Length: 61
Length: 243
Image (cartoon, each protein chain N blue to C red):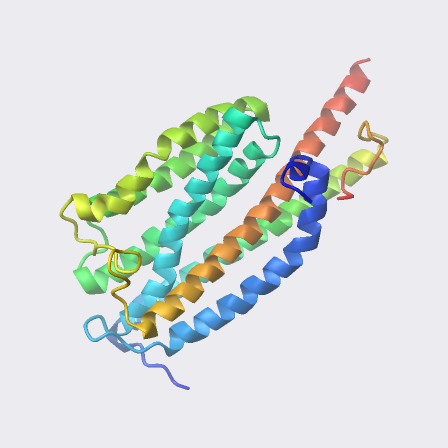
């Protein structure tokens, strides 16, 4: 299927590309932040710093 | 699991671990369907192919206000009910809302140039959305400026509720003032003004972007809970060293 976007194709493509880029940045930010926080928690637990409950801070249960 | 159970961050983390993969899968499927339908939609008789920008612009514009609405409810949760996850929800939503608002402004500008002959016009709708974007940035700056999350939460909650005044101004700006921006064409008295060939892809994209927000928001809330655990353990470590 070929799609003709007419004389304003650059505006349409730029809109979709910008949306894809911003969504990719959001997903990347959330994933990298999760990795960073769990790594910091593991490092603290390895140093013997634990929660009062004694549970692992990275475990959701 | 009841709503009150979710007040416990540990139970909330368990819930997010279960639902996030399903939400992400549903978002990907709906976005794929929505993008296919958007690409297949016919050209508008006046706007030509630029009508395709609507399928990105309108969901982001809706979400820019919806996210502030979510933050306003969360702010009530902070100030009135003192729900332990309310400020986590508000803080996690702000960057996502800012990103959607930025996309609404950018895609609107890229749509405006071929249709209106200008990227920007200081009319009521565009200006009120720009103010919303600046308020998102202000809130994010406030969260970063105050170290103690509970103190920052109360200040941010007040600012969020004051900022909610802007939501009806954005919504009704096209009715109250003479603006370049078109009036409401989907949610209006007498039904949608859009043909089904445009309305269906638009609604699918709107649901897909809403699911994307829910997925990202839950993931960002999980990260914020973990960040606070890091902070708490670091304070424990500091007090052990001092003793």
